[in-house]
Image 1: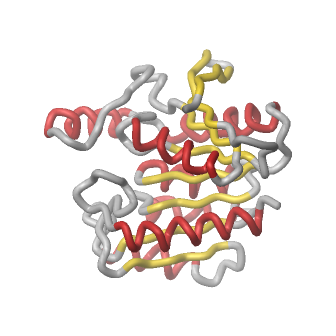
Image 2: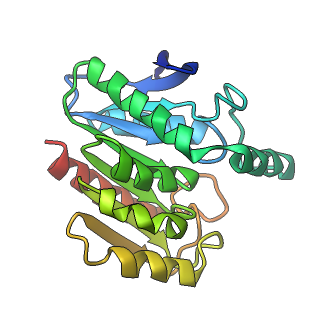
Length: 229
């Protein structure tokens, strides 16, 4: 069970969910939300990372639109609201808020900080790798990365991307553009899951696949163990 903390930026203050390990943290990881806010699934990811020895912090990135969004993927009305929020969301200020969360994590006494994001958070994890002082970043089935490939030159620390081969939100041509653009970048590791659809690691979701979620998460943990030591 985690707690909530405040994170300050020039434009104001927002909440972030914090999950702490039982002992001294190995490092910290910023958990970047999907389009449903810092909901049970996102808090669960933070709790899981805490169980693996990390201090996890999940910032409320929709706070400028509506603080405290906590919805699911289980109804048409919630999906409608989630897309409305995503369309109104500004990734530019989102990355600034992630940088503030990184600084907050370091202020909690850890030196190395990673990031992991899902869906919209996958895009933001990519931008975090390109724009912030993160030490390592992981993106799961990130949307619209193909529209930001001009930022790849900004990547200075390791980045891992998990791509779902049958992703309904990231079409094959977009996937190809991402892979072709990044495959020769020594800092970037890309894993593809040919039979999986978007959000295949979202427990309770329609596309959840326990076997490939386990594979992806084990790869993520090994990546963080290597790059946040």
